[in-house]
Length: 162
Ligand code: GDP
Ligand code: MG
Image 1 (tube, rainbow, N blue to C red):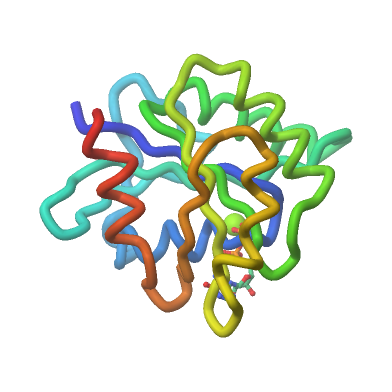
Image 2: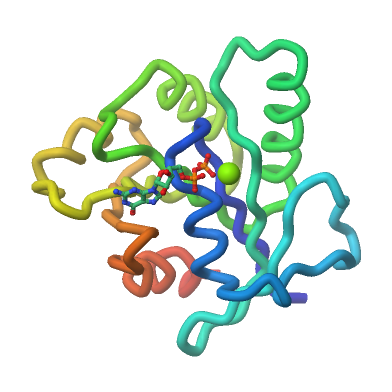
């Protein structure tokens, strides 16, 4: 079985952009992987020599109700299913209460989590992402999903220990 990598984070941080880049083509979308449920979007990713299943989620924003509640629930299930979690935050928007809420949840899981600051294109990545170390989840990787920047280093960091 290939390792399962879940993309989580509040809405609009770039999860789907990263998903599309990792899977490259709509053909990569897969319906059936044993043991995985269907409410989340799965794709088979091939990046350099790495192969894994990537799971896109709708997002978690904290204090959810209605449709947001359902979206949050499937994000929480994706975390349970995953071998490794990529927790995306938005380097341009900076830290938000939702990021902190998600971090609180992730810290309680017995699962490898990597903080990924997306959208570092055109900004000073080191200074704009420094605040995210306060999430208490270790190293903050910098990527620009829309431009493919930083992804190779991120995957090496997150997948090699598996
Ligand atoms: P999701 O809600 O987390 O799935 O976020 P999306 O992937 O839908 O992206 C939200 C917005 O962020 C879109 O307008 C994307 O084009 C934009 N975005 C995603 N990645 C990047 C990036 O690397 N740089 C910049 N500047 N914008 C990005
Ligand atoms: Mg999305």
